[in-house]
Image (cartoon, rainbow, N blue to C red; front, side, top):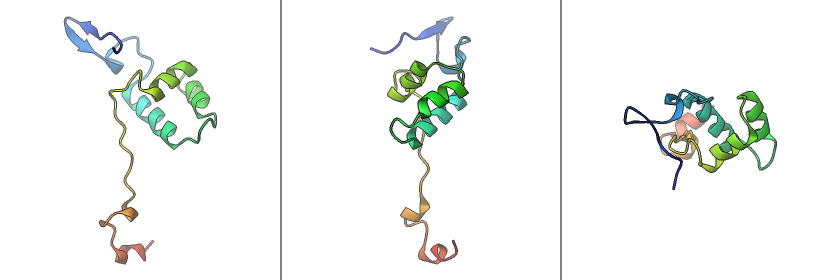
Length: 93
């Protein structure tokens, strides 16, 4: 059972559509990106909480997917590990 959906005139609202939200989608994408790059327990969560003026528990909830879980962050593709990056291009790095 997820968080209750807030509505305005019967229309569901989420994310920055909720007027009291401290974060915008672009902020959460950056938070999720930095969390995915972080080493375990390296202080990233606390640093992000300070940088975005939210609590440590907000960052923990984002990381666990309890909040903003609907917002997917795609990881960049390393073209060197695909067939799209031919051997001729590898020599030009």
